[in-house]
Image (cartoon, rainbow over all chains, first blue to last red; front, side, top):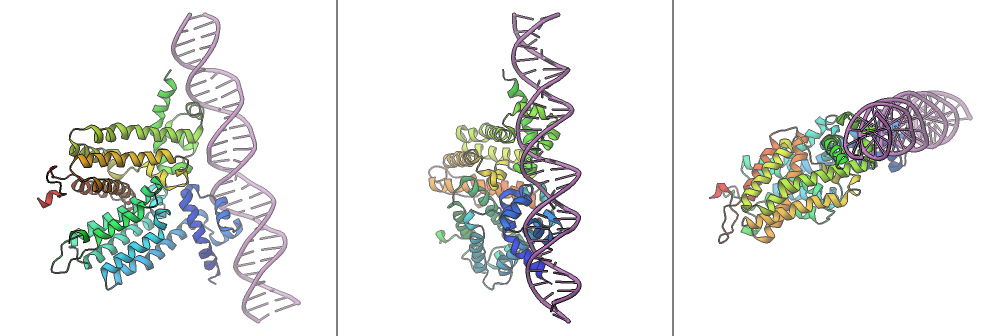
Length: 200
Length: 200
DNA sequence: ACTGACCTGTACCAATTGGTACAGACTACC
DNA sequence: GGTAGTCTGTACCAATTGGTACAGGTCAGT
């Protein structure tokens, strides 16, 4: 049955928040039972692989969310500028205006990076390549689009760190709106220059 | 006598690397004795406050390093553009071209942020204000300079995350050289427009 | 109603956690 | 060379760690 899968999906959000708050090492089983309300038995029944399987499942669910909410629109939306705007809006919601951090980014920083290397790398690589595609369709020249996508992702990750460090709730939305100005051009295929709205 | 202080300073680098690798929660005393070569007795003699005091001392030593190597030049160097170039060069060295992460940024992400809140905030705030100063002296108009400094710091933090995630050793230096182009203008006080080298 | 599979709380495990106690080694100063 | 103070390795502590075992409960299909 998919019953076990249902239980897992019910537990995943709370598990994700525990990993976010305490990191991989700091996410103890006690904290997980407290956060999920589920007993140890249930936890280990749903995730026989223990902590590692829980983290893998959380990362997989994050992947799924980004895939449908962000990557697919970037690939498929007939209006690339709208897909990019949609990405920024979804990012702002997902990270709760910078109050919530990126678990993939957190895992990338520590020792646990190696354990989840392929998934972490895939998250960043897919984001960059789909965003690059959309930027090209939005009128950016090829090589610049790739660089711009790389910069955009770094800016998002960095702004999350910075916002938490400064405890400034306005910082992340500000960074995103500056990004919007840089990513979304008013160019046409015949006139592919990058102009911020202010400059026209 | 500064003997105890000397011992502490000798232990600090290794302790810093343990915190960097495993985070605050994952930095166990066993790992610290292994990394420092010092016994438990020595460790607790040098840092009676235990783990928390060790982390505080490490953060303080990072503060000191940035103060002398980066913040003071940004404030005092008669040539602001040179101070900014110096900052980027020092940052590249300090973070080992992106192979080493920013401990302050790491602590900012987790639960331990609250414990070290003032120090973490001061690190980011001082960096931004001294960089803003230098940017103004380098010819950027006031409000834009502050924004640009904020963006620069976010870019550095984000690129560190991204570089580790992608396991790409070229990414961080690339991000820094793009930053150089954005931060260092060829303007004069009478002609304070931001022009990248390519555009002139 | 019976059965079989699944689910879950409790008790338990060895190992490790951060931290303390302290005996002895070392050192500097008289 | 004695002595006071500082270091440091070892043994130890209660608490917590991730993980297992399992008895009982729940719930479907028959």
